[in-house]
Image (cartoon, rainbow, N blue to C red; front, top):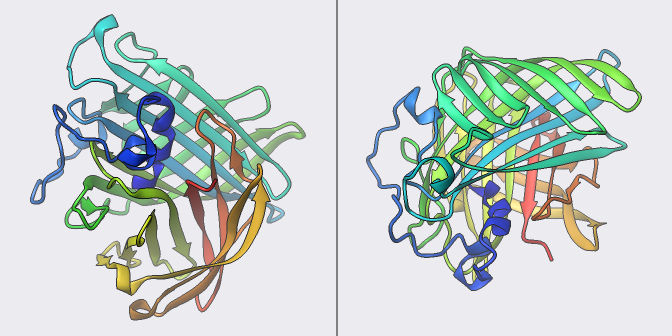
Length: 345
């Protein structure tokens, strides 16, 4: 979702925080910008949007083995345009970045890849769908039937993702506002994949099943100048309902938004005053104090839950560091999900 944008700081070293977190409040002159009323088109919009500055394909999976042990997997491909030019070959101004992680209750493994555009090292095609950076791949005949692979020296995985559920358009038909000043992105998701496959850990292979959530988002100026970080939640409840919520932390106030998703895939946008988020406990991770347990409530939809990290040390020590890992949900609804947090110093 929007909150995946932090990783682009490494690609824009000249941008200051005063321009918005990781430079994402920088002026979008020369780039395309989202506008209200635009209609997303599929499968075209599963592919890349070179007129926009930033975009990503982002999968998080909650998995378990036959003993009930829990695991989390992250697969991400980011695209960043360094200039508002559409050229090919070695003149292509695109930079690609891949992140992957595998989380257990005891360990958190991660990897990173970087690639330049225009030479085939990384890219995305909409139909048949294929997203790749080197040998890391997310691909399939359609967006509803995908294989997902990645490997590092410590771990690898090969997972199959399938879903017959509808795509979810966040915000107003995919137009997702991110600040009081009106910055926005195009944002949709497939939150209802069923997953089956194998994790290869240092101790050996493990067969797993579970669920996965895929986020798609693109923009050119998604944040305001004073937004300093964010907390993003994707929650799948055992009764079939789902919730996406994010909090963009500003110097003066926080901007909160989300989407309520019924078991049939029907959506209701949630405004800031409809979501209550409170940190309950923190953990010192990489010399930073990170909230690893939260209270979240949405009274209109009878949600009053506690969100707890499965592994409180799920720190991504990548080119731009952040916290991301699987969570358990308890309270008047139970389930699993993922939490991402950026901007904690």
